[in-house]
Length: 611
Image (cartoon, rainbow, N blue to C red; front, side, top):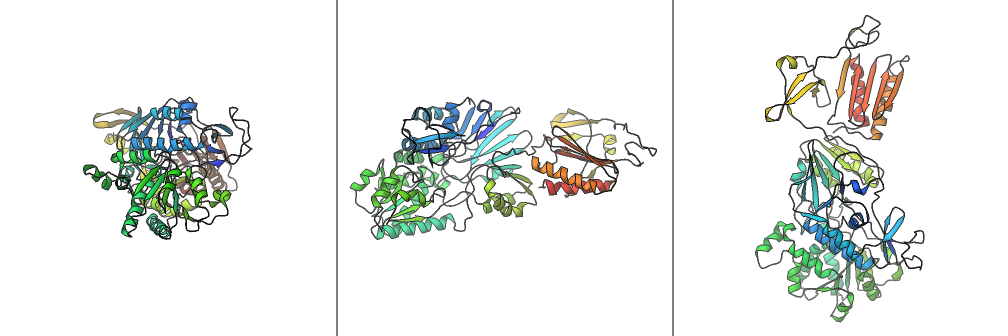
């Protein structure tokens, strides 16, 4: 692994999948065979990374680090872990619910083709103790030349985007983020991202909001009111943190507006009490409106008031609900429908045609998970509510930036065609780089530290700028000695121009080349800000250059020389030389005729793209 500071962003755990006999169970597992009642959770593939070389793990939200106990308790990882207090506390609640439902030989962690037992509560607590809690906008040092600043992503309590400030540039790690309203959490901090020249979209992206989240919520409220009005029960599978807090608030207000406050809500989960209590003591991470309640007799989030006035009841199991008067509006654990109280509740009301199961989690709308309960008389309705950023919202954020950006989408190969189309309007100033296959190495320029350079009048007069790009900028490369002067300025002493050792058969001027007589032109794009290279782009550029040079003349001959990360093309008839440095992201073009430089330069945006 190359030197530097190595950062891992999040350590998620995949959604539960049925475990079949194709998977070999750990030796400690009881001897009975795997069945549909067992599940596997896939960890990210870390085969290419030695955990001992990871210097830091940055966590973005309460659901993005459910695989972290594997890293901290079962590998050689010894780096630091940074997360907001809310993301750490609420994430531990999500994990505790997961362990309670899928422990005891029910759930397994899949790493590659290997299965390991589900985390224990001891591993969970040991992992939690290793997380360093940070505040939004706190400046943190991760290395000698790397600073990290966590900022709000607006998705849920404590959700975070990370700003990495190197000596060369600022990078924005954009996790799951939201600009949707209403939201219980603090708003997304887009101003902090404005200063970043590179945005890495690490979190999930919502499907197009043809129906906005607010419209979906309004429809949800109407369906709930209709169901309870005719005496039916409503079952809402949902996670223990996040949008649950908004739905409790919105649905209660809708029922009160309809004069239906006599129908209380119930929340069934082994962590129900902890989740709602913790959310109300994390007021620092709540929205501005919710924080205002901190200075009054009210709790920051509405569910505190609902509990006080007995319009919301908490149950560790469904058993106690049945002793209360219905109909019921029940929030229950495990939107996956594979475990937990939801299965018992569906079994209890499956033959009631007035009852309804409403699926709101966009990750779990597949009704085939309920085949074991068929036939069902209760209604099943899919109403996904996804408040994360859409492609159009991402495009609008990028398009609103005043300076050129590089936007990377490293983990969304299946969305590549849609992303490319949605972000097309931003292509003039924003270079979008996609990973089309999982595990692909993505490279992008970081630039270099910028200083003001002081040149003497004599040295400046010797520099001849050349046209650099479509923005009509002119650049010139120089070679010399630099020393740091006052106020972070660089004092430049230019080296004398190097004499050419090549001779011309036609009498030869310096660097003229055979048959020439005039000076050779050169165009060097070094660490060019609009050049974004990856292995595929470099190969396209080499092939395009070779084709272009061979079409120049029947007598032309093109030689391709590869030396490590550098590829050089040499055309013998017109004396054109093109050197591509894949590691330093530079292209150097030398030719007798300026027209050849222009021809080669026109291939760059076709092969790499420009900002």
